[in-house]
Length: 90
Ligand SMILES: [Zn+2]
Image (cartoon, rainbow, N blue to C red; front, side, top):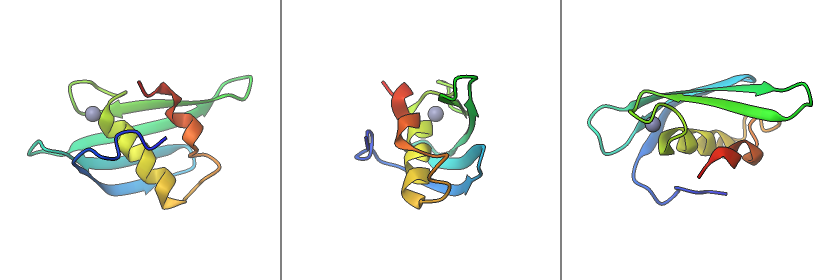
């Protein structure tokens, strides 16, 4: 939990929806990363996330993790946006 919290950067324009998240992540690069994360449940009811990011990593990156953490901190849609969604983090 709270992995990456010590890193430099800021989450902006966070938009939390029941099935998705979007935000800009301003890190050390001049241009912010655009992060879009979609949630889904499989047939067994397990939750999954599909992170996409405009950085070269393309998704399962620090930016997506930081956006998820910011969404959890925001307290919106806490049933959908839960810490268990962070299990893909390295
Ligand atoms: Zn990224």
